[in-house]
Amino acid sequence: MFADGSKRTLNQRRLTKRQVKELISSGALPRPDLSVALEPTSLHQSVYELEGERYLVVFGKTVAGLAGKGDIYAADVFHGFARWLAKVGEDAKHGRQSSVGHWAYHSAHKHRLTENIDPLVAQLRSTMSKTKDELDLSYQSLDVVSAYVEGIGIERAQREIYDHLVAYVGEVLKLRIQGHWEVNDRDWQPYPYLVGAMYDPVMPINVVWEQLTSPDLGNLRAAAANEVRRKRKPPGLVADAARSVRAAAPKSVLATLPADAYEVTKRWADGRPWVVIFKRDVEVAGIPCRVGEAWFDRKGDLIGAMLSREWLFGPQRFGAGSFFRYYRGREDGRLNDVKLGADQEIDGLPCLGGTLVWFHPNQRVSSLHLASDRDVDGIPCASGDNLILALNFHQNGRLASAVLAREHVVAGQRYERGTLLRFDRDGSLVYAPP
Image 1 (cartoon, rainbow, N blue to C red):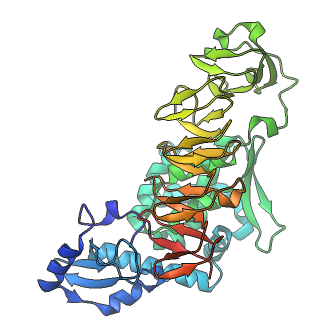
Image 2 (image 1 turned 135 degrees about the horizontal axis):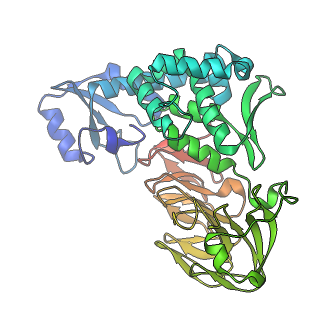
Image 3 (image 1 turned 60 degrees about the vertical axis):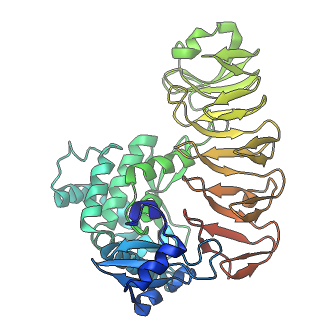
């Protein structure tokens, strides 16, 4: 029923058909009135009331692999999800599915929000009874804000502090990207966003909307960091505003390479090397890098480069000619994405050379392109390098979205080849074109 049952169910493991039957036969009370509330999920679930303010939710016969199985939820969790479903339906009915549309409906300031940033931030501190030192516009302070929103509830946060959250998150992001506020007045609904020299438009509204429209509050800090990561431009696409700065000596691992092994083509604003061209194959902190472009951060740590031979990053092995990019740098060790040098297998799936494989912060695959059609989690997934054909995965490894490689039946409904389907973290269908 929920996006992450492992965190919200009272049972540690999904109940088997036998366990469900035993519960029902022991006196569970059918609640068809509550089953109706779950109809928008299209999972044909039945609800039974148990002793101790608990509800048993049983999957319907049309849900392949889950039919007859179930989960137990505390009453407050169940009712909270039912209210969320009703709210989603109401938003969809009135055209508020998008982040901007949803924010604009709840916003008191609309596009004038940028004229009220300081008062909104001050009001949020006052409302939360926090000082400037506690809400200091850092990533860490977003944990404090998340806890406050969780305490007052998402519905109240939408009504009372939506603008305040957008303003505060925006100020955190503005410092992070060294940017400034702008207003997009070209669309039907003007909205504020952030501009930074090394980023595509950064959307504080997206960060807040994502958290305030989930069944329960997520993590504002993680969502903000993901927004920055997604919008960061590759160095090759950034105007070289630092070309005329005075050169500064390289640091860290770049300083260990011979000066004649590379040429600096772009520098950071402080003059440190940013983009270099390796003149020959070299090893950077033991990593085999091929002739060509490589990226370094201000501290001189490696950001990205092309492999000169096969190399292992944690559990993932990549072939020569693959261009890797770290999530936060070599010392952190986690990958952000890899452009494959040739067809190769990733997590048992044949992946297409020349395409990008993206990773979640927990290093599970986030997105990839298949080299040939394959069944994934029981879904026939289409291959190809077109962006729409990318397979997307949740952080728990389950399939999040894919385009069907052939006609297929999901949750009792037949879908044609080429249909884009989306799934929740438990593998249940949550979207399909009408």
